[in-house]
Length: 553
Image (cartoon, rainbow, N blue to C red):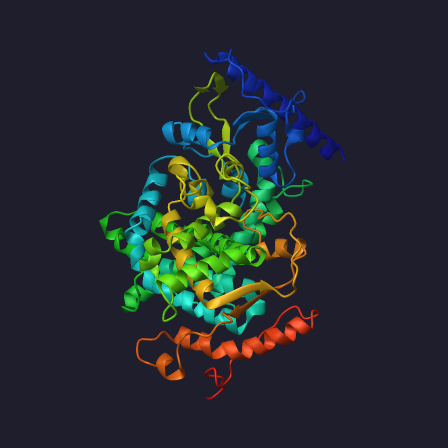
């Protein structure tokens, strides 16, 4: 007990000292006489510590912005200055026009020191190593380079849609498998196993550690001194962090070793890791060759899953949007093939729908915090060096002046309007996600394919809309259930494809089209039965030997 009392007392003294140091630092600045932006009034020593939101912080930040009529909000938490950017104008002024000052990152001690995620691109300080990693990302995922991965994505998408029709009650598992299949194939050339793939299992555990660290890490970011607390200290994260370290290291080392061995055996397919290893002889740091492909899974796995499930949730709550997308696809492409990457310019409504998916439920509502490196003055407000700057993408993409009725899913937000593509969904300035072009391009065929080939609907007639949020990368389906949405049912289109069995079997017709057609008759029967029995939550049918509208086969 005496030791605990001593440590608590030391912590209080540390808070007071931190506040004193920051106050002295401000007084030495030539801009010390200037005010901070508006924000909630804090308490002595701890400042706004008790004002920090416990959940849905993006909503609270947006509320403060409206309350104080300011796109920039200030908090002082135990001497750490935090600025919240809630408007597109302020985000552009600070993150774009003054990017040289606002591109660094805070220290993230829980993530980088305790969990040893110092290899994650998002946590890299602004400097030479970050530039080297970013350069390699750009080489593989700039708009032109992403085309090299189109065939792989198309193959995985077709397999995903087929699995979806076979097991519509396993939407989350099917989406997650597709995400892992695409990412690991591109990053390492790994062919993912259908179930319990060891690389996927390891990566998922590492992602879990990242999520835990992000939640607990907030207090460590504000009070880095906590990283020095012993493992036995109540509330210390050190003991918990140690359990995750083997997975975090294996996620980087194991797939990289697989590629090196495959290259030595002459069996390695094209991949980001293979390209990086090829640059080692030209002086590339091997740690970068290891870390860049590992970052791909971190950056894309949960975001891909959440964005895809957001689409299914939107189509469940707003079926008219899917009908419009299907009508456009039918009119432009017809029913003889699935949409592909070349159809982007000819499908404006579908393109707007993809953008709206990104806006409506942001995968990451608040961007990874930035750190300002030099004292700055903005609109007469003082922003001290070392301050944390948080971009509230959720609030920016819900500005009613730009997006009328922002809570509604409306692809029309991006039709016949000068509204810019919602880049706020991917971060800001020089720290914007380097894979955003790939992310948008890969979303298009998945959503287009789902739009043409399947119907998405709840298994009951009425869906009760509630407050549905995507808390970072938390699963959309969890929120669908909280909103009293029954399990989402997926089936192929009710209408027959305009092909006889003989037409469908002609060379050049995609097998998925044949497969979808083969299911339709059986599914109509199931749907009619399900409508008469509202207690049924999920209707699924396996095509078996049903081949054509006459039932022959």
